[in-house]
Each structure stands twice: as C-alpha cells, then as structure tokens.
Image (cartoon, rainbow, N blue to C red; front, side, top):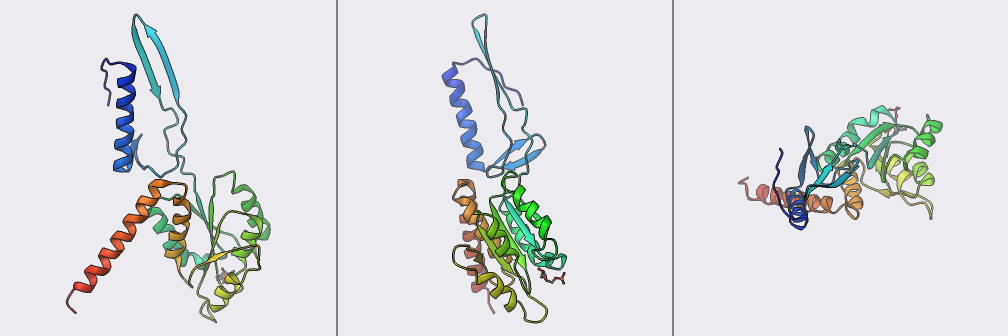
Length: 229
Ligand code: RP5
C-alpha cells in the first residue's frame, strides 16, 4: 500500500505514531508475506533519508530487514528422542503464545560434549530460558543450570520403571546455589507457561497474551461446570 500526502513533519510523525499504536492494539503486523505478532523477535534495520527538494521535504523510511528473524527465546532440550512426545506439548503451547522456541535432543550422559557446545553458543543466539526434559537419572536440567545463569525449568519425564518419580527427584533435588525450577511429572504445559511468564517480565505483549490465556481457561472451566451431567 502506498500513500502520499503533503503535511508537516509533526503531522507525519503523529500519523506514524497512530499506525504504531494500532499495530500494538491489534497485536499483529504484516511484514512481507507473514503476519507477525508484536511479541515476536524481528531484526530491525532502519534507513532514514531526509532531503529537501524545491521546498518539499522528502522523508523516506524503508525497512530492508523486515523479515522475521525467528530467533528462539526458549530452548527445549530433552535427553532422548523417546522424550519428544512429552515435550511436544510445551513447544505447541509456546507457539500458541507466540514465543519462538527450538527443540534439541542432547543428553547430559550420552552427548556431553555436544550439550556443552550448544550451551556455549546459546546466549549469542538469543536463548533466554531453558526447558530441560529428561527421565530416569535425569541430570540434564542440573547440568544446564551449572553452565548458565539463565533460568532453567526442569520437566521430569514419566519413566518406564518408576513412573517418573526417579526423574522428578533427580531434577528437583538440586544443590544450593544452582536452582532448577521443577514442574510436575509430565507437566509440559506448565513448563511452557512458566517460561512464557518469565519472558513476559521483558516482553509486555506476552503479558497480555498470558492474561487472555488465563481468561479463556477460566471460561472453559465455567462452561464445563454449567453443562448438564
Ligand atoms: C533419559 O533416559 C532420557 O531423558 C529418557 O527419558 C530416558 C530413557 O532414554 P531412552 O532409553 O528412551 O533413549 O536420558
């Protein structure tokens, strides 16, 4: 869409500000061929050219890097491919909330070197919160927490022999000084919500989405209760 009208610079800035307010209120903007939520990370590179041509002020703002940099804020790590069905629910809920995340299978025991390499690169890649899911002798969350000061959420995976009690105790009983925020056995949704709540301290749009999520949850419960049994 192109629009060209003559106005003062002050009016032009007010129009730009109104457009920005509208994007904030609706929660999404169209960038290229994608709808982007206001909480999504983007790479912003502004080029501003101002020149005066025969009394007419040319004010041109272009957005050359308007493509979304789907930089994940949350890393969901799990110790084995067999954990993927459990952590899938965390990824889906983060997607629903508009929080970019990535999933990796990396084991504290079976791939220790690759895990450390990943953790070393995570800060520069923009990872702000870790969710670590593992079962049995579940040391993944603890090892991650030992190597970062970013928040680590431990997700105990139900195990074959002890139904996840082993996973829960391995994750929750961290030594003083290296905390892991542990959710319930199989509590993938709460792991995702907790990660989103941590990020919402920094991303206000996410706060609003979490408020809506709680509201919809309450409505669903009330609707359920009123249905005849
Ligand atoms: C842990 O051992 C994994 O997190 C998984 O929950 C458990 C069993 O792994 P597999 O034997 O299924 O690969 O490291």
